Length: 108
Image (cartoon, rainbow, N blue to C red; front, side, top):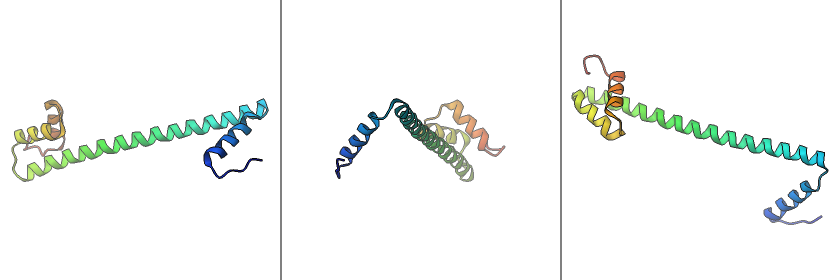
């Protein structure tokens, strides 16, 4: 048996062993390998979606806090609307939606 400390050589030796398996064993090995790779890809996708969702929630919280701070500091709704559009690159329609969602009734 070939012995080596190099991880690359060890991986190549393992791959050669797997290639020399009988057909049923090779199919079983490849099936497990595919399942492991599929699981890793799924984990990466789920993690990425979680990060995106967290970023979106953070942005919405920032928008909410800006609206509430502007209200407490007496900033006029039109100026808050402009601020939302400028700092968060929102369309006027979307900024109005957030303003309506998180404002007290007398503010908008």
